[in-house]
Image (cartoon, rainbow, N blue to C red; front, top):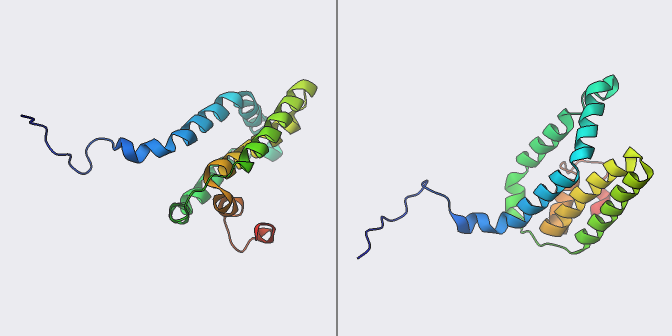
Length: 145
């Protein structure tokens, strides 16, 4: 006879709800480890270069814009697209070219390509469109129509 109490709402973690997000966690962790040197160099540039002083606010502002779109993203079905892997491969080539040539610009560009490729790979074209230009009034939205 089992004396297990029924699960109560708000108690514990529902693994079935979290399990679909494991690819996102793996990719984000891999990007954080792989691009640690690039992120550290960006931060140093933002701190030491006075005209770039607002740089640390860019990821915060981007995160805020994504947070504001959470309902739209939740209502849009994520349909992964393998073309994102090609974008990520180009990003890795840019990263290694920057490392090989000891130039920072391709490494920073690689970070953007990897992020965009990840969104396309895991979320699909609709998510990439939503996240590329958070405002529908953006002058560049015509590129994704």
